[in-house]
Length: 144
Image: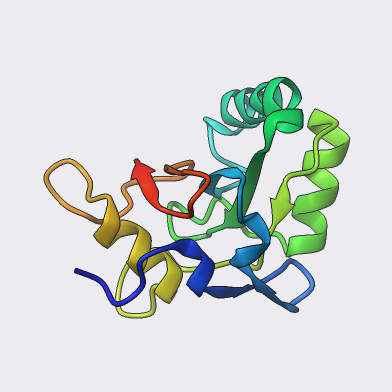
C-alpha cells in the first residue's frame, strides 16, 4: 500500500514551473495522461480528450496532461510550445503540467504513485505516450 491514498496529497509543477496542489481537483473526475506532440497517436488522443472535455466539462471532468519525452523522444518541445500546439491544432487547452519522467529511477513521485495504485498488464511501467489514469471525485485512482 502506498503512503499516499489520493491524488490530493500531491503537489506538482504546472507548465510555468509553479507548485500546484492536486487538491484543486476535489469533487471532480480527472483523467491524468502523459502526452507527446510528435507521437503517431497524438491526433487521435487529443481529439478524444477534447471530445470528452466538451461533453463532460460542465459535469466536472478535467484533463491533467503531463508532457513526457521518454518514449522515442516524441515530446522535445518546452511546455509553452506544447500548450500553443494543442491550442492551435485542436482548439483545446487541457491543464498542462511540467514535463515529467514516468518510468525509471528518476520517475516523478506522482507517477510512481499512479503506477502503484493501478498497475499495468504484465508490468507496472508506463509503456508509451497517452497512458491514462481515471481519478474519481474522491481523489482515488480507479482505472488505468
